Image (cartoon, rainbow, N blue to C red; front, side):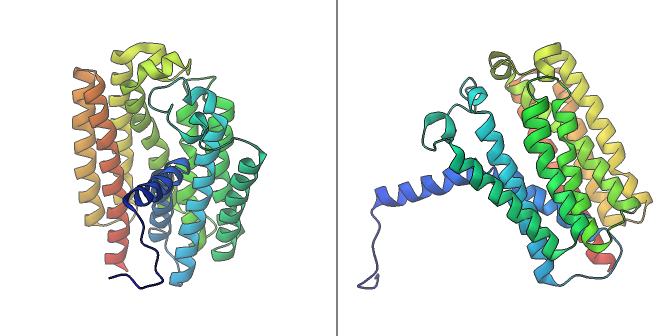
Length: 304
């Protein structure tokens, strides 16, 4: 039984609390933020050098996640007009008015991003903090503001945000990036196009109605699906490179398993383009990245 002074929430209040938590989870795109934070940890794990105290590792991961969260919230703040024209995004809080897109929110987003960069500097060094800043800036300013409405290369260049997260983790151990961190930075750069173009194929009508020049809008589903297959093959080929740069058998197995699953689903998409196949490939790319990052972290631990 609850304590006499403890407030008992009604079912409606509980649902409201859950909804509020979900609101902020989605606003700051914390699914992406947590993946970006883990990406930085993979960069740290594969970089040869002295071990860091646990608090510094945690603080760096938190800093990267905060900066990514700020960039994600700014994306929704800046794109509320586009979001209102897309079925997938028209329920976002700045669109429906749950949150007011005024200067207070913009100041809060900037403060969160700044806190993430400063935390990275405290936990690691100025080079790591610079990479954290560049990652958030690439997604928030370069991709969202400058490129998304102008060119189908938007997501390709925007993919550098993930690369900077890898380099931030590596810089915490060694500010000068070595072959392995650079290889993983390239892998993250190559991962974004097949991942996001698959989603863009699934929601091509949304992007077309919002007049966003995503690749499937400009060249159609069939050619876009073939491009996704080519990009997936390029990504999987690059993902094998770390095995020749010092990574062990565990990483190689994870890279082969995830890569095979992604190429298989990309081939299915190329043979029969459609929403269902596109979403299956979108999820296959997430599985491939998860296996790759986990494989890198576990492999590094086994070789320690």
